[in-house]
Image (cartoon, rainbow, N blue to C red; front, side, top):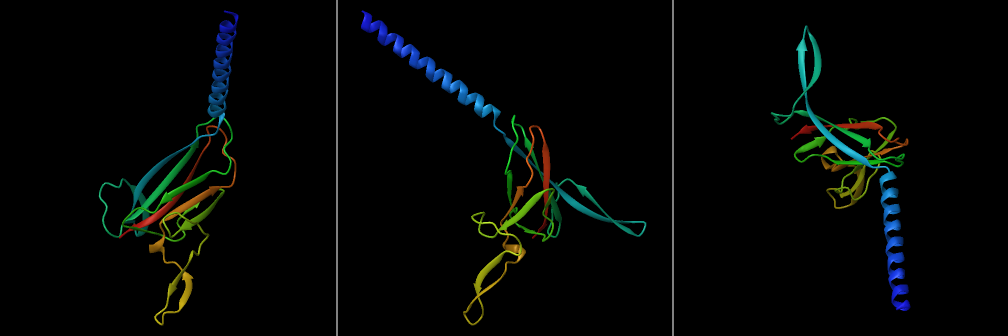
Length: 172
């Protein structure tokens, strides 16, 4: 009987240790930084008023070839500790072309991919191709080849803090 009670206590003690470790892991996870992303898109609308060109933003309900779309990505640290090395990645939407120089974000390093997000480089993004004689050449990739944009936030993001990054594209 004593051996059975010892065994039961050992099982109970092990279960309590596992429960305590699980609770500690959950608390540690709850204290981690968590970055939530929200993407908002708008269409630029240019108008001439009193002889001056003005640009405003409108919903993207009717989009046609040649329209300029502005994407704003908001990042929000919903966790309970500071987030470091925050990275935001967004694909260039299908049937659009990235507008060079339009990517922006306070305290960010901005990189671009031309291979579906496998690698990222600072502009100009270089690519290898063949010239008309069949020789390999390296030249800047045209904006039509950009597939993804990456922002690396250089400053820590405090709990409940937010920031935004933006870019523009032209509809094909």
